[in-house]
Image (cartoon, rainbow, N blue to C red; front, side, top):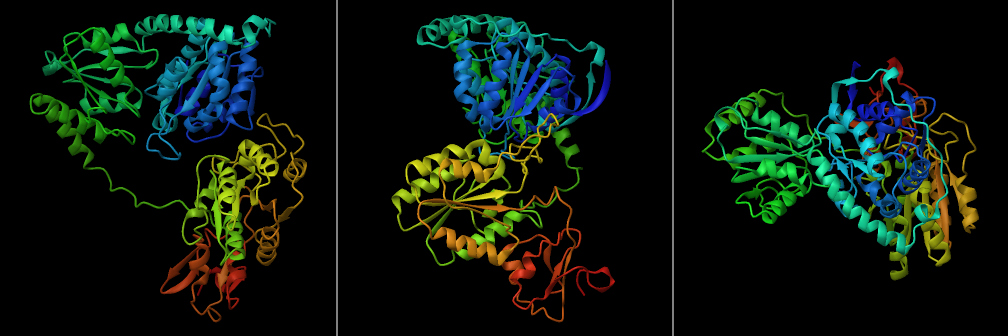
Amino acid sequence: MHTEFLMGNEAIAMGAIAAGVNLISGYPGTPSTEVLETVAKKRTNDCYVEWSVNEKVAMEVAAGAAYAGARVMVTMKQVGLNVAADPLMSLEYIGVKGGMVILVADDPGPISSQTEQDTRQFSIFSKLPCFDPVSAQEAYEMVQEAFDYSEKYHTPVFLRPTTRVCHGYASIEIKDENEYRKIAPEGFVKDSKRWVIFPRLSYSNHKKIEERNVKLAEDFSEYGKNKIFPAKGKQEGSRRGIATGGISFTYTMEAMGCENMLKLFKVATPHPFPEKAALRFLEGLDEVLCIEELDPVIERALTYIAGKYQLPVKIYGKLTHHVANAGENTIDSVMASIKAFVGETEEAIVKELDSAAMDSADLPPELPVRPPVLCAGCPHRASFYAVKQAMKGKKTIFCGDIGCYTLGNAMPLDMVDTCLCMGAGLGIAQGVGHIEKDTACFAFVGDSTFFASAIPSVINAVYNQADMTLIILDNSTTAMTGHQPHPGTGHTMMGEIVAKIDIVSVLKGIGLTTVETVNPFEYSQAVETVKRVADESGVKAIIFKAPCIAIVKASGCMHINTEKCINCRKCIKEIGCPALFIENGKVAIDESLCTGCTLCSQLCPVQAIEGGKAEGGQSHE
């Protein structure tokens, strides 16, 4: 064993490697992305890694390897689980031969997601076991234990870290390479009675799943990470307790301290719920406060158990509005919840909480809130602006998508009228078009998302004779999640150089007759192309192709010719580039941000924005 300073996601990856993972597949999505990337960097020679085209495919690839006896992990964020739900729900009935851990990173807040879904609820829905780590260290250990439980019960299992566990850093005790498990998969053994899902098999396996989960609940009641902490100090005789799990346990421990602590139940496996351990916790208590993210999973389970065994204990939490029912918990919010729960009767805890609150008052002030914007030089800004100018004065709808280009909704661009989930913009544009025949319908999608979830919608549009314009924003990467490769980039996560999947050929193969490619930074040509293509009937596509500014070198810096500038501020008012700002009442350019994309210079009515640096190396006079 040795110690390394690791991010939570890195710790999970190192735990999977130590457990002998043979295959890991996934689709990038914050806060899960670094798990697969770390395995790719640190993997052993007998481990295969891939970014799959979407979460559904990733789940199916991992399932196939698990059928063959391999230890596998599939990674995604909580909304990605929706995409993977179809194979998952059937896989629950079929089961696996090797160990299969489904890492789903939840995002309370939400910080970088469309929803605040709670994967613990999906665990209950799918009848699959769920592990909920409280820290990076526990996540490292838990992923290894999760593989063991998966193989013992022949079932996929969830590992559900949340953002603060995924992205928090800590010194982690990890195994040396000579301590890693070595897994030699047996291979796939043909058995249609086991691997081919039919109604009769599903019926019999459903009964087995219910029996298994009863055994798992008993097993989890003895699982070392489901732990009861006795009351301490002046609280030793208190008839109040706290039940918590995940990062909320860490916050609770920090809030209460260790000297005067209420009885505490740490729930590491929210499903199947460790009922016998819960009964031991509830013994002698009159009131219990449940602190958790996001849904009242622990609260509902304890309420059920109290009713089932007719225990005279009141359960409080989100359902009773003693804990906020939306957003992520913080130390401050946990302190406030505990303080309100104990009231004035637990004087020692109140004093300790007040003392901790005073300590937090010495923290530096919070940084000012900065709304996210497209990067300076981002080709998406030029693409959106070209479409906006081409369609000015016409009745249009601009259906957006998930990615950097969602930021096209910000002023002054204001070019995202709808955004639902990955690939949904194409279907929404079709739906609006079928109802409002006089509306020019546009759907924007990125190159990575095109491969992940847009292709079926394009087929649907052609087949059902929709009238819409598809705009593909091709920046040659998966930008928002950290520039991962995809089928159009020509390389894999294993470092192999492969043939690029050509988007134009795919669209032509689907049946589009009009597919045009244009550089969005060639402003006049871009506007003319949009006008011409949008006037055609049927389904047509424009590919705005220019690389993400984060993966290419800047071409220089623009500067303001103050003798020509009339201070009309059109450059600032119309495109919202963060490199443009006002200084001393005049437009200026921030050299540290400017990439020399030239978009602003093409819009300037007096040609006052020029390439290169002004005399003396300054961007303005």
